[in-house]
Length: 249
Ligand code: PGA
Image (tube, rainbow, N blue to C red; front, side):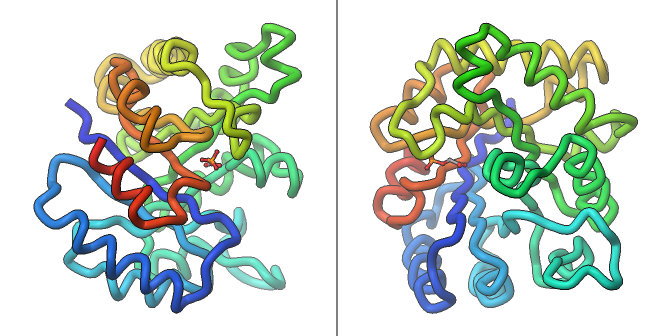
């Protein structure tokens, strides 16, 4: 059994004060909930104070991005070492907004995954097709390429430290969720592909989470799919009571 992961991706929202207010309320909501892993991904500026507030709470801290370089003259970038030092145990890599708005290629994402692993953080590796690709019937082909290039030469041992997030781009922030069957089918495909690439054991243990307009009303049906092990939640994670309902699915 994979412990479900419910991760909040706050994107470019919330100040330090707003972030702390949220997590202090969240900590009370999740007292006694041990059968699922909650993760919060605030902005870079809020990582350190949020991490301090989350100490001993069991709630994980994720960065939303990291540099593909180790250190040096990369103005404005944040390295894996800095993020681990700030308390991150997870980092979101290859979110579609990074791919589409900031031109991140599978190769860059691959290097970022390597950096995250090297510094002991679990990458939450995002994949998913655009609306155009979906309409052209290319969903599986696109996610296969993203996985093969993003994980190129990453060893089965490291796969055990990863989370894969399937996020169809057409479902992100649009209110248009994939149906549980659509999402379940994509997840089953991903699990089978991972088994072909890395063997049964790493594939069976890999948390595969779904993202794209997840809310308190659809989380239950999504989680009922055998290959869906959690959710990466954007918009609906910004309000603590709404996110609390998703956690309590
Ligand atoms: P959404 O975002 O829940 O607002 O669709 C999900 C994500 O981008 O991870």
